[in-house]
Image 1: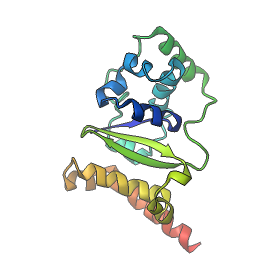
Image 2 (image 1 turned 90 degrees about the horizontal axis):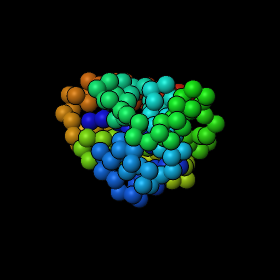
Image 3 (image 1 turned 180 degrees about the vertical axis):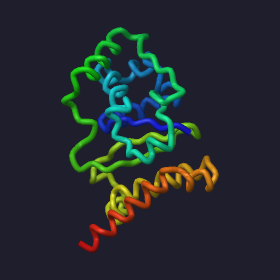
Image 4 (image 1 turned 60 degrees about the horizontal axis):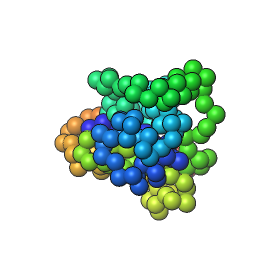
Length: 175
């Protein structure tokens, strides 16, 4: 299983396009749904130096676009390549998610876990009650367990991330 971050403002368009997981790395198919600026930003958001996926999760699962075994090439579109390189070298002024947004996940097929942010008003009751990060890890663990053995999930850095989020929530509630 691999992981992918989709910036909040791009998630709805990609979900509506109903692309298969392999299409999410195909620049030409992405350009059929998104602008060249958005495609470049999508790749930028998954670059290991900028990706907002929590570290325990990033350590547990390879990134779908930039994982160690992935040879990602966006050179099929010169425009996207130039925009991506500009973002990498010059930084970015756009936000990947709205202020106050909470992390959420969506399991796409059995090989891909998509991470994005959702507006606080779209968060489920459990996200608000339990605490955003703890609810996020709960959801991710449930999704991983659908495709991986319990021993694999519980032995991964994801469990440590969940434990730290529970501890942080406990401190917040007692303060």
